[in-house]
Image 1 (cartoon, rainbow, N blue to C red):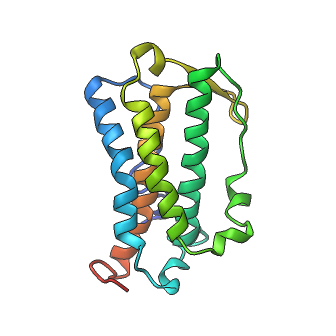
Image 2: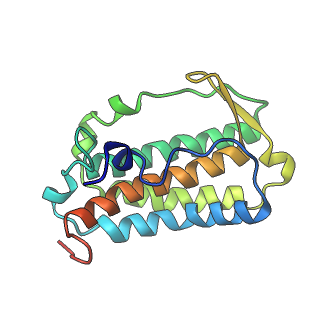
Length: 182
């Protein structure tokens, strides 16, 4: 059995702000573009029993993770747009754990998968042709007192999507659900 840290961070911790090359940027944009399809292919046919399985002890269920990714990426998209249209805006944080307990957390995953599909089409299109000056635009996150560039945001959310995808994919692997439709 993997350690709790391996279960919590299957691809390691979030990347530090270290800048990125044009190749890094293209790789990360491709990861953002492909996430909705990968996640949909993985879970769209899973029965409720699987969707309601936590990915780790005391962790969120698969269903909550899918809804969380949609919530998180919607917030990131809005923050991206704010950074592109305002000077270093202070964004509004939200309590992810509380959002994961809201009544819609038990809703089917199909609407969140549809949100991700359409959101990522717009978000990736918005990010694809940014100039170096636009990639350097920032927003302030008051919860952790950090300033993020849009280049940082692209790296962070490419990681975030794969991080949560791997939570679910590795749960499927551990439980022998790979290749099964339901």
